[in-house]
Image (tube, rainbow, N blue to C red; front, side, top):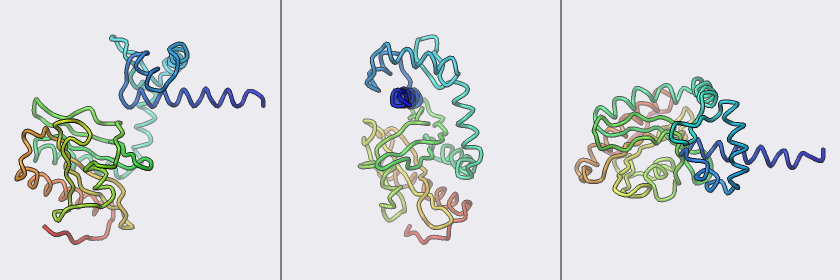
Length: 224
């Protein structure tokens, strides 16, 4: 079929645009620049995605995930016990630490994605991370997903992904003992003293252990 390469290229471009909308959203020019397409090509593809309800355009002209994309995401996650079981732990972590709690998994080499989040009750907080991807190298989340931990069973890093934000993360294990995800807390660095980092770290590691057990992971010894 002579038109297959062109059709494949169109699908690939549409998927790249959909990925950009999901990760950060933006105006037509923002998204075209992000995926290296001409504005006219991006506009044509976004129009198709909007008609099919995979994306929507808000009152400020920014493209956001649409209702059909959200339904597909919800359907996919509904069958994932990790996603469902993590909810209670994220809520309790956010309450115990007064900071934003997250669930993240590896998605490809060198990248992780935030799947679920419960925001801090405080006015100044790190929010809006659900669906975002970050590099695993040089981040607390990446260290947790690799099992590269400190004595307390958690990893911490400041300013790795965003300036003035400290991340504290711990791994979640599956039934076979392999790391399947990580829980993390994100907090403004100005209110994360070393003493508070240790306190938050113990909470994150404790909930990560409890979630691992809920998933059927074998018990693990951890130095306090």
